[in-house]
Image 1 (cartoon, rainbow, N blue to C red):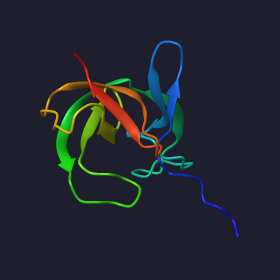
Image 2: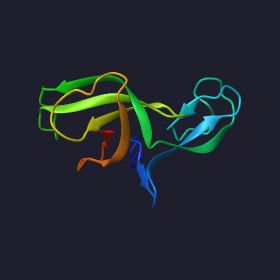
Image 3: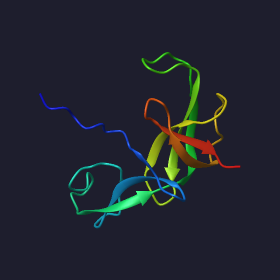
Length: 121
């Protein structure tokens, strides 16, 4: 039995910022965190890219339903990374929604390995 790689994006912590490794399509310009060999949209060639750490909230909610391995309530947002893809992130801090359009920055990962962002102040 072969084990499947974890499909969740992994945050890279270098000296100056936390970023995500991904790829950009040479043909259509799609930004992706996929590990695919070809663009999932146009099948074009992908080249390595890094995304983040800054982004803007596209949508936000507080999850109040118990999910295995997670204790509610916890805030989550879809974040459009600057020059990158949209990612789903847990939000650091109290269980409050971040307003749409709020500036955020990647700040790490949760204990479960999910992306974590904080509202930029």
